[in-house]
Image (spheres, rainbow, N blue to C red):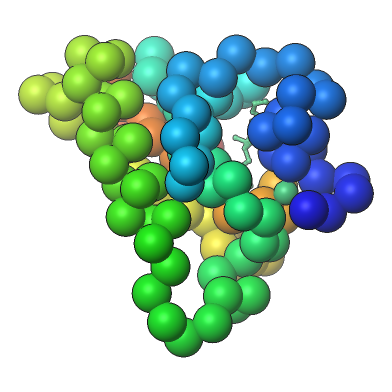
Length: 116
Ligand code: AMP
Ligand code: ZN
């Protein structure tokens, strides 16, 4: 847990935010500044700032994050129309919140690869 991490605080209920989903691996909230009708954040419970903090072995939380993303896409009604999963990694990747997370974006045609 990083003391100043906004996503750790949301995870722990110190900052109120509706959790659309929560399990042993991850939780899901709506992005506060959405770029599409569906814009969710799939956030691992375990705090690690970025991928480079993980060891070389596979992290089981990632499998859980993809399962949660798939279920949330169904729930949001974008599973058939399609959606995009994005992890912004590090400075050039455009990462702003240093607690690794995956964006789930859909509900309109997405062009290009950028978030904004
Ligand atoms: P990234 O550039 O991948 O680090 O994206 C961070 C995302 O977190 C941005 O899309 C922000 O809009 C979003 N965000 C920041 N603070 C909050 C918050 N308190 N609740 C929900 N989303 C947030
Ligand atoms: Zn954190």
